[in-house]
Every structure is written in structure tokens, then in C-alpha cells.
Image (cartoon, rainbow, N blue to C red):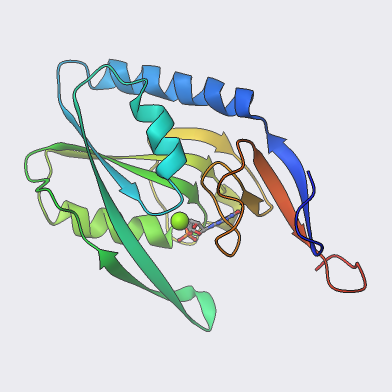
Length: 185
Ligand code: 5GP
Ligand code: MG
């Protein structure tokens, strides 16, 4: 698929592949949480499409809430400062909480979220990521449900953006950036 002039998109996971993995993840979650109520915490904004698809396949009772974050680079990736910009509206104390993230990369974002949620004493706290980019991990994170494992590349579509664009694409694509001479960056 064609992106903007400097941005080349190539298909990575088709909508059918994504739907298949979402179905399998939902089945595992239905099994693991049978007889319990699940409180899902989506990390904005990248998870909204994934979350919407996944919850419609759940058979356990579900509550959904979101958190928003901002990260400020302080030079290198490992020294990123992450700040909470939107807190939960519900209490998670004593609840079975499942955090949903679009892409797990360095692990810094999810590590920050899991730490502050843990302080609020949920009964359990698990993590579901659509894409796990293990190679770039800086902080070790235990992930319970993974859609796809990817070693490298920057992806867009299915809720995931590049500079706020491409979230509406039904498939997941790799995006390559070219400079004005057409060279890959
Ligand atoms: P981490 O804190 O684990 O390094 O970063 C996770 C965040 O970085 C994700 O929530 C996502 O917003 C962003 N990110 C990491 N890899 C990609 C990617 O391939 N594409 C896009 N669009 N965002 C990414
Ligand atoms: Mg994100």
C-alpha cells in the first residue's frame, strides 16, 4: 500500500491474520478468567482498535478503562521520562486486571504502567501485547498474552500510528521512511 510520498508501506500482518490471532488470544483469556470478572486497562491511543476487537470475543464479564501517557526523550531511549496524562476512572483494588498494549518495545512504557497499577493492589495483574519486539527490550517485562513477535521494523495500522496517521488502516504494515532523494533512512 502507498503511504505519503516519503513513507513506504508494506503489508506485514493482514486483517485476516490479525483477526485469527485476536480470536486465539480471546479464547485463552476466556479460559484463564472463567468465572471471574476482568478489568481491562488499555494504554491510549494505540490499543483502541485491538481492544475493541478483543473484548467483543470475550465471554467473561468485562470492565474497560484507559490510561494515557506521554514520554519525553532525555537524550537516549533508556533515559525516557514517562508521565501519566490520563488516569483511570475506576478503582482496580481487588480486581483482576489485564493491561493491553499495542507494541511492547523497550518495555519502559509498560513497566511504568504495571508499577503504578501494582501500587493500587489489584487481585491480579497481567499483560497482553499485540506485538512484542523483544530484540529492543531494555527493561524486562513478563508478558502473558502476545499476538505477534517481531524482531525489527516500525509498524502502523490497526490503531497504531506514525505521527498520528495510519491508525485507520485495517491491516498492519511496516513503514519505511525515505528522504527526498529516495534513500532509506
Ligand atoms: P516502549 O516503552 O516499550 O519502548 O514503547 C512502546 C511504545 O512505543 C508503544 O506503545 C508504541 O506507541 C511505540 N512504538 C514502539 N514500536 C513501535 C512501532 O513499530 N510503531 C509504532 N507506531 N509505535 C511503536
Ligand atoms: Mg503506545
